[in-house]
Each structure stands twice: as structure tokens, then as C-alpha cells.
Length: 140
Image (cartoon, rainbow, N blue to C red; front, side):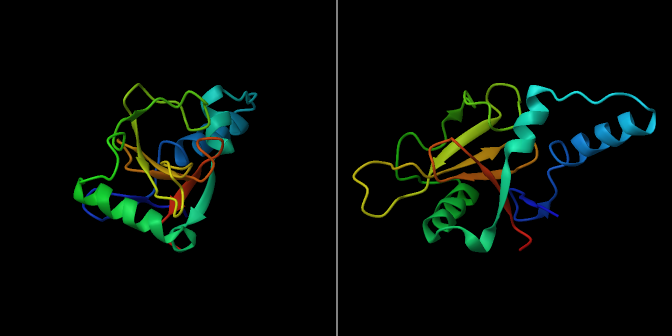
């Protein structure tokens, strides 16, 4: 099972994106209904997962700073992530925030980020500047 972080260090499953989608699918199949994919469902399906232990070491630094509330190395850290690409599950504006994962040797912020979700305290990692995301699995 994939677990997300909790602001006090507790881990719990991000129910809205995983369990909710599965329950809706099962419910539709049990009553003989049809299943249609919404944009949110498609986005949730396109998000992969990555074991916490497989992240680059700089991602651990970023996650620690998020837990501590900063200070962050870049002024853009902590800003609202708009999800314009539509890769992450759809939520209201302001739900997601982004943070830089430092790329050694890069003269800029680089392409690596951690994007956090507020309600379920989920953390996503991207190494390709929002083209793809992996939900961080803290249980492996």
C-alpha cells in the first residue's frame, strides 16, 4: 500500500486518490453499470509510485525542510502548484504546493521537484519538470 506523509510524521494512505477511485469502480461494476474515466481518474491513473528509499538524496533534504516549514533555498519554494499539465488528480486551486529538489551541478533550480497535497498530505516527486509524477511510498 502507498502511504503519504502526515505533518506530524504519521503515515496514512491517500484515500481520495486511491481508495475512492477503486470504490467507485467496484460499485459501478457490482450494480452492472458502465465505467467512464473522468479527467481526474485519468490523472490519478497516470501517477506512478516511488519508494522513499529510491529517491535521490537531495529529495530527503527537501522533504525534511517541508516537515520543518523551511527555510527553503529558493523563493519559489512553497508556492501554489497549478497542475496545469493535469497529471496529478484534480483538486481546487491552492491544494498543491511545489518545492525544489536541488540538482547537483545545475546552475538553475533544475527539473526536480516535490509537490505536496494539503488534505491528504501526499507527496509527489517529479524528475522531469512536471511531465510525470510518482507518489512517494513511505512504506518501502
